[in-house]
Every structure is written in C-alpha cells, then in structure tokens.
Image (cartoon, rainbow, N blue to C red; front, side):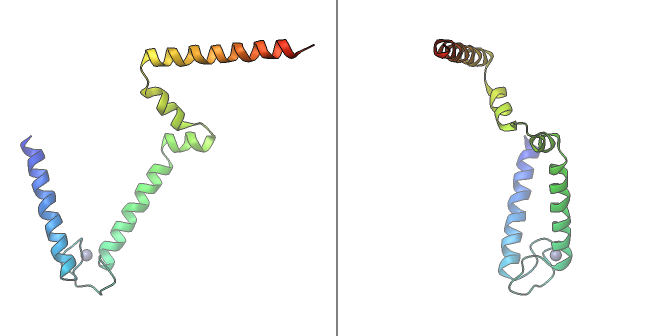
Length: 112
Ligand SMILES: [Zn+2]
C-alpha cells in the first residue's frame, strides 16, 4: 500500500516537472536540454522514445494473439466467449443447436 502511494507521489511530481519543463521549453524527458518551440523532446530522448515504441510494436506484432488474428482467427469472439459464465456458454450452445435444427427442418420441408 505504501509503495503504491509512493508511486503515485512520484508520478505526480514527475508530471509537475514535465509541465514546468514544457512551460520553460525544455525537454520533457531529460528536463534539461533547451528546445526549439516546435519540439517536446530533445534529439537523444526523442530517439530513445522512438526506439522504445518500435520495440513495443515489434513485441506486439510477434505476440501469439497477433499471429492468431493474422491467421484468420476471430480473437475478439474468443475473448468474448471466455468472459461468459459456464451457464451462459451452455445457453449459447443450446441456442445454436436450436437454430441449426430449425434450419434443417426448413431445408427438409423445402426439398421435394
Ligand atoms: Zn532530453
């Protein structure tokens, strides 16, 4: 608990330092380098941030979920079904079965 409080404190002071740096046109990452008006990070910090972003994107692209959805698996549907309770899943299965039987009945009635 105490450590969460400390983290919140740290985040808040970091946020204030960033706001101050922004007002004084300094880099919001290292808080030291003075910048041109159109930039928020210095070259070095910007490069580091971009590299971190690239690493994050590469990690996400190689994740099992990304590979599964690239393969054509409806990951959203899987995740939705996993959120259901066993009773709800059973009810869905029953509903599907009922629909399939109805369709089969219709198909039989139409065939001469
Ligand atoms: Zn910097």
